[in-house]
Length: 299
Image (cartoon, rainbow, N blue to C red; front, side, top):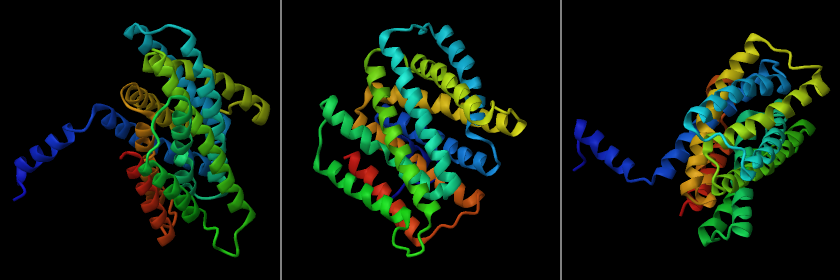
């Protein structure tokens, strides 16, 4: 018989504690990143320009991570810490592409494609870090293709140019974030403390964001809405990415990264609930395929 009441709570808690620490960290990161992705989509619908939210967000992340590293005693610009430039560059490309994708399409369709980035990370880890490629991981790749197809709605004869562009931008974002996670793994394996690596990324990211905002939109154009959205994404980013980097220290990239991609479930639920996007049978099947991908990659 299943235990009841407090015994039931204790029963499930004990099993949760049996999970490796890096999996718990990856799950926590996936939830926070899912919330951040939803807020990015909401920012687009509130006419907050990409240059504004990225500068607002990074203006909060940079000082907080500096203070954190200072008091933790991990502030050190070692050579691996400069990989933060690579993660900043690809993060910005991924972020801008994702925002563009959401602007042209739907967050509940763009986000799952965007979050299939772990396939790119997994392949890089296999090629350059000698991580294993197994049958479940191959099945995961196949399911990834199915998920992208189901969310893209390619079957419709009235497939619009905007919808096609939205899917293509989501794929660009997917590839960019795949490289980001690969460089995360290289950084922490190089001995960089998670919060120091995040600080390094934030320093380069804010530089890129300011340059972009001045070139494209004449400056950040700060606003209360921009700061509000930036604060939420910054908070999610600080704790989510720090948890992810800690997970990378203990687990393989081909396991940690797929778990992180559960974040799109949080985003899809929030977008469907709060942004009044439609949850179609096709999207539900896409979610099933995407979750199947994650399960396959964690075998």
